[in-house]
Amino acid sequence: MCKEFDELKKEGGVEKSTKNDKATYRDFTTCDVSKFTGKLNPIVSTGWLTAVEGVFRTSACEEKKKVIYALNYLRDSAKTWWEGNVCENGEAWAETCLWKEFKELFNVEYAPAEEVDKIREKFQSLTHTHETVNELWKKFNDMIPYCLEYHGNEKLKLDKFQRMLKDDNREVISPFKCTTLEDLLSRAHVREADIARKKIRK
Image (cartoon, rainbow, N blue to C red; front, side, top):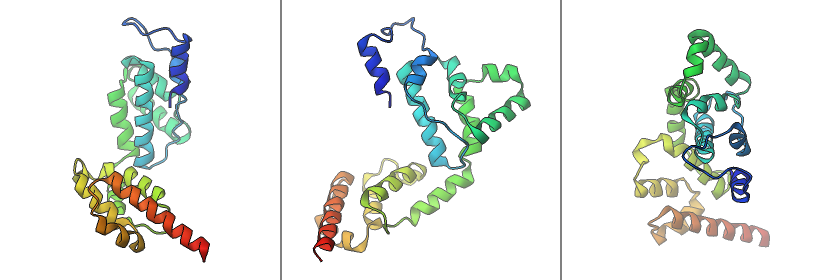
């Protein structure tokens, strides 16, 4: 994400880090932060927060500047939402609001409990239909952070992903008794490629 910024540092375009260095807005923007428009989707909103926090780390952003910098990447209804908070709480509050408080307000608005519950329900019924194995894998990884029972349990994740696969994939893969998600995903890719080749020959 921040390749350009890393290259600038190597080339001397950005001063070398010292304890007294201050992150500049240019350092932050070099990392090409994405815009957030206010979509009510916990996967999208959480992804934006994670990306922004990654840029904070790369640019060594000071705590007091985090909210100020991030606000410049709010658009449309997200910008209106923040302006509403400022009207309600005052300019003085906005100027001293730290990232932790911003995140709490942001998650209440864009990752509310009822939307997270919808993701959990959708995850439980997620199955392999018309999408590719990679597309299914992305959905799996996007949703599983919201399903706490799977956290830290590799076997549970593996069993769940295997059950999601199409019958003609699962029946061939199951006898191998995969013990890691990487092994399962690799075999699913091989099986998918085999099926595609057979279709071409017909």
